[in-house]
Amino acid sequence: GQNIDQPTEMTATEGAIVQINCTYQTSGFNGLFWYQQHAGEAPTFLSYNVLDGLEEKGRFSSFLSRSKGYSYLLLKELQMKDSASYLCAVRDRSRSGGYNKLIFGAGTRLAVHP
Amino acid sequence: KAGVTQTPRYLIKTRGQQVTLSCSPISGHRSVSWYQQTPGQGLQFLFEYFSETQRNKGNFPGRFSGRQFSNSRSEMNVSTLELGDSALYLCASSLGQSSGNTIYFGEGSWLTVV
Image 1 (cartoon, rainbow over the protein chains, first blue to last red):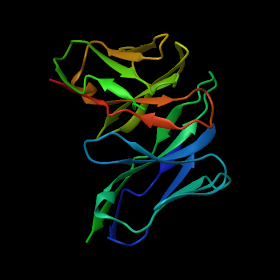
Image 2 (cartoon, chains in turn purple, blue):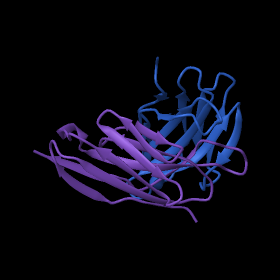
Image 3 (cartoon, chains in turn purple, green):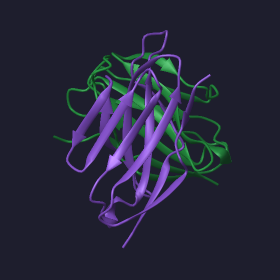
Image 4 (spheres, rainbow over the protein chains, first blue to last red):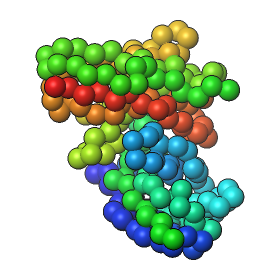
């Protein structure tokens, strides 16, 4: 089967660092995305990992270990505007040739407090 | 560069009616995917199109259909609407059929079925 797990909720303090974990079991792994979604809005792209290792983009970093089926999103210097849901999504390659099917976790709601 | 454009943004339909949603991908992108997002089920894959061909399909009933035109624009149709079809419908755009391409989402179409 296909399964993506991430914590339901997390809280953190403004200025701090938070790590959101994601574990996955899928049949056709072709990369892992992290998206941010504010309430009532569409998901916005944060990062994409295809190979093992760390990808850094400003205050956001994402790590992937394909052998462990594990990824994390690291948010540094947290700001109030970072309060949102963070979605982990695996790109699943289909037998019919499609490359762009994403399987999403349920999302992690992050609340940043002053 | 314009992002993924979806129309209409908001609509209200009555049970039994049908609805057509439109998506214009980012200029130069040829792959379009559709997702349904509900509070209970999260983000679920509907279908994926590339070069006017459906490349992948999710586990939705036949009432859900889509197509892609030669200019890469896509439409999805839901017939015989049910209350449970009330959701945010998201279109995602990608350059092509490669695991190296990033996937970007449009702002979505909010459908309410009454």
